[in-house]
Length: 206
Image (cartoon, rainbow, N blue to C red; front, side, top):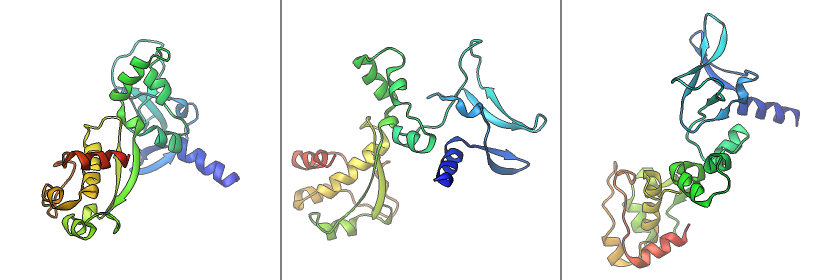
């Protein structure tokens, strides 16, 4: 239990710094209490002269403003797992109370906070499974996907494309699938809705 606690403390609070040409993880009390900023306006670095971690503003900010750092574009689940907090409620509400309009607006502004991750592959039980396995390239034999609140973003389109392929059934729908060569990328060239029936089955997978 003590080891697990210590490991989680280091994992969730350590900063990655380059010191003397080597990349290291260091603990820096107080600095590790900085709240998350969805847009990057500070950066941290090791100051060789001071022999210390320093946080530097990348733009002018009013005196007295809280110093925040950008922990990356991650889902709320990833923030909780790796950093020990979830920014979703405070960020999405943006300090304006539980306003549904504001919640929806910011959900679309920060769709990655609600990312759902899952693995998909062509199971033998899917219709025409053998044909589909021959159709896809190695990249899509078994792959992790993500869908966000924004269905128009590339990662969502890629996941929905593969779902449409999985649910394609019969000669009519199979004929609408693209010929996926070794370099075919569903993010760059997504499969759009094939038929109404196929799209219903695709959305039911969600």
